Structure formats: C-alpha cells, structure tokens
Image 1 (cartoon, rainbow, N blue to C red):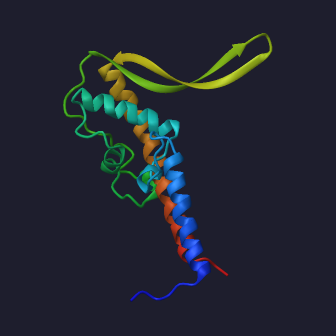
Image 2 (cartoon, rainbow, N blue to C red; image 1 turned 45 degrees about the vertical axis):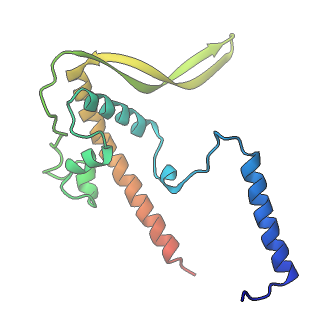
Amino acid sequence: MAPALSAAELQRQYRAKRDADLERRARPFWVVRPTESDRKTCLCKIHENTEFLASTLYKCGLLSTKNLEQLADAIVCNLDSKACAYGECDACSTTAVSTLRHAPNNMITFFQWATETSTSGEEKKSIITVKKELTKSEDEVVEEFQERMVKFRKHLFNIRWQYKAYRKLRKSPEP
C-alpha cells in the first residue's frame, strides 16, 4: 500500500503534471526539447567552415571520414599535449591529414561562412555573416583544408582543455 501523501504534496504533484501537460500541448510540433547531444558542439566559424570542407572532401572520396575530431586526433602524437596541438612538437609540426588519393584539378563547390560589410543608406554600415557558395579545384580545397586543420587542432585542444578544467572545478569546488 502506498504511503499517504499530505495535501500539499498531492497539490504539488498535480501542478507539476498539469504544467507539463499544458506546456506539451501548447508547444508547436516543430519545437523540440534540446538534448545533451545538442549541446556538445561548437558552432563557431572555425568549426563550421572546417566541417564544410571535410564534408566536401569526404563526398569527393578524398577523406576516409568527415569527423573532424578523428581527423585532428590523427595528426597529433599526444591528445593531451599543448605542444602537439600547437605544432610545437617536432613530430606534430609537419603532420597533415592523409588523403585517400591525389587531388586532381576537378572543380568542386562547397559552402563557407564569411563576414561581409553591408551598407544601407549613406551612414549605416553593418557587418553580417553569410553562407557563401565557393568553387575551387580539389587540390586548392585540400590545401586550404590542411591549413585549417592546423588551426582546428589548436581550437579543439582549447575546447577539450576548458571542458576538463570546468568539470574539475564543478566536481571539487573550493570553499
């Protein structure tokens, strides 16, 4: 037999259920609740533009995966070393992502986020970020991707280090 609940506890449970039902019914069908996996991403320009390049090269058959973390981890000898991530390590300073085949001069199209200055009227200037469609040869895209991966591995190291430091502080706060 279930233990008897006080009137206040029963009222709290009823309100919680009613509020959840009301919220669920009033929310449009296209609005979904965020999950934890939705928050484990970085939506910065470095991440997105490198991801666009990786996806394009993967579709062209030049990369074995389009997962940026796997590609960045493959070009450093120690994931936890700042020297490796920043290219200060002798072994990691010259590494590059290996491609599956030689990139010919075929033209390919890909997207990139770019910052532009738009002028409306005589005095109003605004800086906007737009998604541009670019066309370059495969070897130019591979070269650009290799250059971006050098920046990306630094960026990824910083993100991982910050998350570790944050988790450590959350688990053992100082009084």
